[in-house]
Length: 357
Image: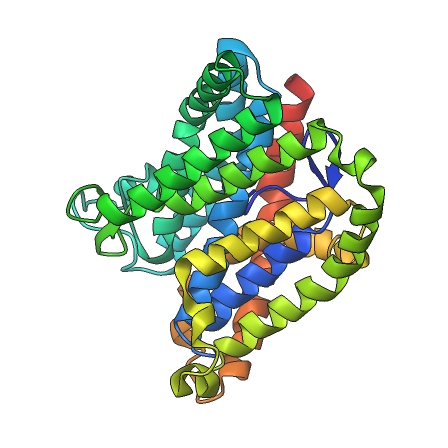
């Protein structure tokens, strides 16, 4: 998913390994971009991973929910994982950094109240504003998916074809949303400006999950064990190479020289992220997936949401000529604060929720 889902990700049909490490990579790219260690596009790579992974995992989460009560449970889980720690961070920042949030402001991105309720958000909090709205739409997306599959099955389309057809429709909707729902048509007020709604990346991940679910339920892995074995080896080689290329492409000297410029395409980066999720899902236990889900990656992934929330407020304190210096110190400070909020807020709240449901 998202910034909040950690550990081995349950899809209802198996366990997906490797997503933890991708989240760790994504938050590192965003932070490195914000401190000036990488080109501006680096944050975009991280955002593409987070938004599309959110769509990918949201599909499997809503898949396990049934009826009206299931939808409420889906919403409650998202609320518990995002809102309490977000509110705590905002309130602490309000007291720690005078001038960022104002309790008497009811109109600007510095408004404490508007930030708490995702109406107008300060700086990097625009991401959460979009994410919350996307989650509100998930049951509608799933209802649409079920309806499309039902119609195609009635038209005598095989089940696998019907599910893949639904995935294709969501990809079309994603492209149409990005092209036509521009900021002047539909936007959210964040970061001091009106930003185009970013649902298209979420839909890419949602479509990828539909494809993965369809292939697994069709018995793809059992029928093509040889291909899965080859895919496991390919995944182990291809994923690290791809991540290295993406990272190198946003190093300032490389990016400004125009080299590897083809990797800057928004569609391409999102598609590549979704391909990685599918490879991890279908090959199950590749070497790279195991590495990306090792203990340290799981722990860092659990803290990634907190790192994202905290890091932006320390950018002005780490503005030296060394991007690496900026990155290391900002990451360390953000990591320490993320650990604090994880132990004090996130883990207790999640345990309380699990104990009651």
